[in-house]
Length: 246
Image 1: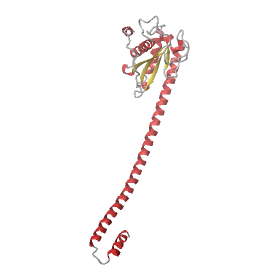
Image 2: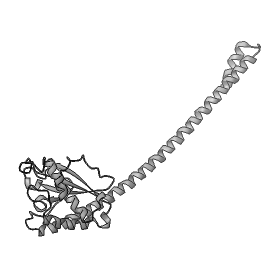
Image 3: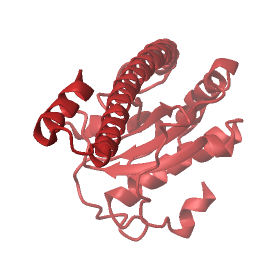
Image 4: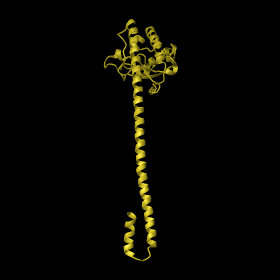
């Protein structure tokens, strides 16, 4: 029909004159028209294929998201079980220690609280005998097969009082918190925790458990991580040589 419409005006215009040049032009226009139609049809096919591939990709992505969510659920459940078991174990140990102020807890920052009154003498970073005894039970639990791949972050916390009497040993509260955490780390490793599974951080006085409660805020916390999520914070100031003795 398109070809007829193109030929008819030319025939009417020129009558019996030679139509060869015009026929050649018509053939060329017809070829271009056919090529354009084929290109349009191919474009429709390509679009449908692209839409189909996009649909398949979206389905695969949804499946991966569902599998990932299931993995996260399993990970959260494993961590919840560990924290529950560990808290129970530490509570039992804390309740038998002389001078304990009560059962140990998991803080709002996700760490298992080791109270300074049990683990350290006032203004000191060396572990007390009671603290070493408590860490033995903790190390035994951390070395169970189901927790063998966990990374242990040992975190030092202090109250807000500035360092005064022990200024020759600790430059500030971050230094004291870091050295206490390091004492815990060293002892855990001496009990069998692999050195590559521990690291230190110190928040000093910046993460209190309870505002105004200095006794509670002085502590070391144990935080468990999967290797993929363990990201050590910026290092605390270099520890003085005295820290290596404990």
